Amino acid sequence: MGTARSTRRGRIAASVLAATTLVVTGCAGGGGAPEETGDAGASENKPVTLSVATSQNEQTPNYFCGVELLKERLEEADIGFTVDLYPASQLGPDADRFPQVQAGDIDIDLQGASALSATYEPIGVVDAAYAFNDVDHAFEWIDESSEDLFSGFHEATGVNIVDGWYFGNRTFTTKDVEVHGPEDLAGVPIRFPNSPIFLANAEALGVTNPVSVAVEEVYTALQQGIAVGQENPIVATRSSSYDEVLNTAILNDHNVGIHWILVSDKTYEKMSEEQTALLEETIHEIRPENRECVDEATEEILDEYRANDAFTVIEQEDIDMDAFIGQAEEYFEGYFTGENLEAYQAIRETAG
Image (tube, rainbow, N blue to C red; front, side, top):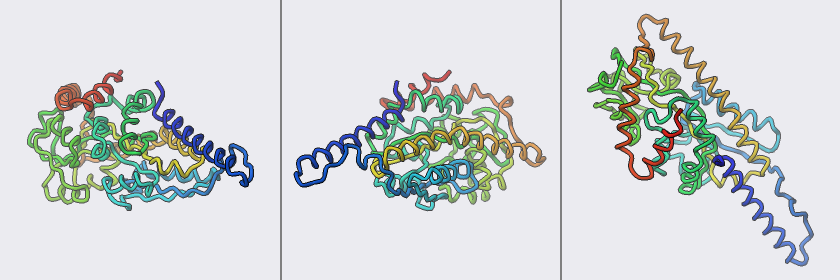
């Protein structure tokens, strides 16, 4: 099976070829127009400025081991790229940025699948709790089995998912609440993002009292006890300073956090084939470096927690992982229907 990247590359090449053919045909029929070679201008690298947006702040690995590397490498290649970075939702929250990506006003964006599912619902299944066994499974699925889902997303939106960068496994962090299995979450007010798939995750994991305040209000909600816990990758918990209020990390890893790298057709149209190839290759090459950076940052933070007598880390060997995973899978087999269920089952079938 071809990958989403190879399918997209073929589509772009076909578009360039068609445009070049029209130019050549037009010149041939124009009588007085000067003759040009068939590939004149087709591979010319004109100056291109790319805007790159993300909700992540500068303290997260997907910034300093992600988009900063992308900017550095594209500009150093000296083939016409200038890259402007807009972290920390400077260009608006996820939902507001996506139409700008579709319009080509934002060239590259990093977003989670739950946000994207508001535009194309089936993509949300990749954010289902325990849809992927681990990050290796997620990357294998991206490289070998994502074509149908990504192509459907492109057809519906005009936006390409070029690849995905890991930003950590989502885990629970609480104030004085130790969790060893789903039953320990009953009645506990845990903050979840206000999207259908994340609220479904709450139910699938045993959270009967989810709190869906906006991300800007999470810290205050934790301070005031409106929520006594939240779920995020450890690096995001630290960069948002939630661990100033919370003191218990539960390493149940219920979701492989992936930021999907989005590029619209309109952005592809302004790049040469060489620029397009470099952009896609650079995004893909950064992926393992980014993962290593996330893993290192996560372990550094966890080691700080473990060394802190005021902080509790509940390790996986002390968690009933089978109960969490089995309960989530049973839940989503009944929650999803139609195309969404097919997409979810296709992911689970690739699990080793």
